[in-house]
Amino acid sequence: LNLCLVLSISMLAQDSTKVNPILTDRFVIGAGVFFPDTEFIITLDGNNENLPVDMNKVFDRTEDAITAMFMTQWRFSKKRKWILQFEYFNLKNENSGVLEEDIEWRDKIFKEGTYAEAGVTMQTYRIFLGRQIIGGPKYEIGGGIGLHALNVESYIEGEIRMEEDTEFGKETANFTAPLPDIGFWATYAPHPKWSIDARLDWFYVALDEFEGGLWDISPSVTYQITKNIGTSLSYHYFNVDLTVKKEKVDGIFDLTFNGPS
Image (cartoon, rainbow, N blue to C red):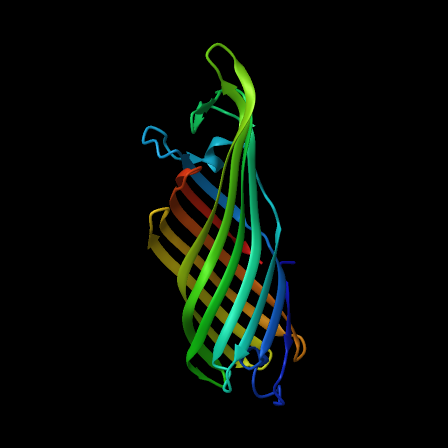
């Protein structure tokens, strides 16, 4: 069920029975489906009295959205040791239920015993430039630098406590973060039709507006149906833990998405 289709356009006149095309093809285009489990912990306005809100524990029901993933890769230079990758995926999670305690977000208090809903959406764009460090007919190890551009939108809505009454309201927090990273990958192709791949991206940054880290880990197994068409089963782990200090958003965002694709 959890498969992604990989289309590779080979530019080499090589015998496909000798070398797996995943190690040699100049262009690779991928499209897949991601089935994530999501955890998100948020604190707003940098108020030490506001404890982090673990949305998965506060609410009765959690709904993760199945999302599409897209990837392109270009091997360039004469020996094709350099690669340029672009990847996009859009992650979404919504939690809802009756609050067992008051929840404070910014200067609003969402009242205990009332129904509320919270959610987070994260659009992720990844650009990566890398080079093969060592390689051979059946393997490759490489590293490089990249950029994760994150567009995060979060909200909570429900009954807000007033002085003597309550009213329905919604609080949102949105920000965009360009996060540089370093990355490594390793591919082992013991057979022209089978390959095993692992990728790791990591960063830690401390700037005026952002402080925190990112982990992006993805192992996968690929089977070449034909020389130009393959299918992969992957596991994807993505975590970003940021302290954001912007004009409209001041808080902590700890977001984790993991699951098969």
